[in-house]
Length: 261
Picture 1: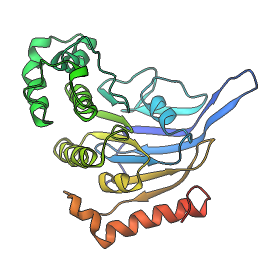
Picture 2: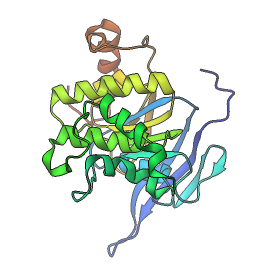
Picture 3: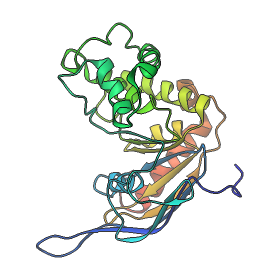
Picture 4: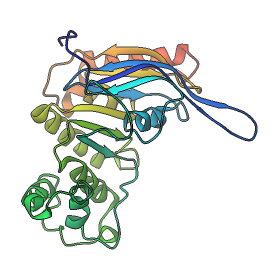
């Protein structure tokens, strides 16, 4: 990757501290990370280490209390343009059909629904939801709901896609299926993608780089380049190279006392 390019996301010594009646609570400390245009970066670490807080800072949903963040070369001041976000919970509105939920992202941007309807239907078909566009979220399984929320995030064709443990609550087979589809979409579009996960194997499978975070207060303890050929299939997870990356990251966490070996 050409590191001379201007990073799409630039985080410089960022920190986040919350106030509480018992005093300041640091959530993130001295986070420095550049994400290049079209790069897939995953963040992995223990619960409570600030992974989701980091994503909220990049999304402009919260302000850093130290350091600086830039997106597309501009200082971050609220949610950046050309942004799509997928949270762990699908956050679908139960009184709107699946199609109307997907089109909600366009309504927020003030764009004409009619212009994006065909694109919404195409995305729903791609994610296995063809024929369910007029159903309501409460009629669908958790995996189907999360597919719809990914469609909603992709509909406006954002340059930056942020995903906060989007597959964490899904069964293993559904998670594998969505990992493959996400990898395909990224391969085709080369969106700049920041992905939060608890799964080391998922991070290695999807990413160009894996950012490792330590225990709270959250800080980066290492960044691992993943040099595996693309496109990647589920079978690639059985390769010796893939297993070495997973073992290396797990061993590093064990040395830090975060996981047991």
